[in-house]
Image 1 (cartoon, rainbow, N blue to C red):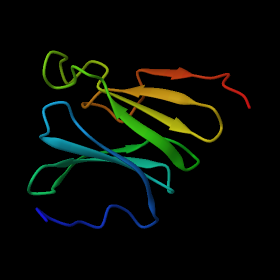
Image 2 (image 1 turned 45 degrees about the vertical axis):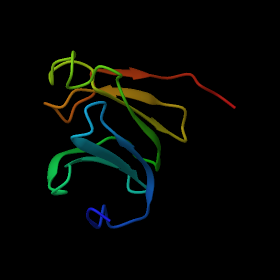
Image 3 (image 1 turned 60 degrees about the vertical axis):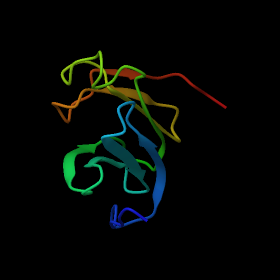
Length: 102
């Protein structure tokens, strides 16, 4: 094991390594998304992403490699059908996609 860290006050529902493997993004039942540096596991960014449990956190394939931190680096989902797009420089979404039902 490289390391261990308590990710949030409620269970984690998703995690995903960045394309360059230098970061780990976690999503939680609290609705928060956190980005951790690897391997020292320091929290580098916290996003109050959703009012509901985070269903998934995924990185843009070029995030932090060919895509700048201020551009779309992460996408998150919640059980209400929302998809939100995030940069690494803000806790406000770049875009919110709604309308996924069923």
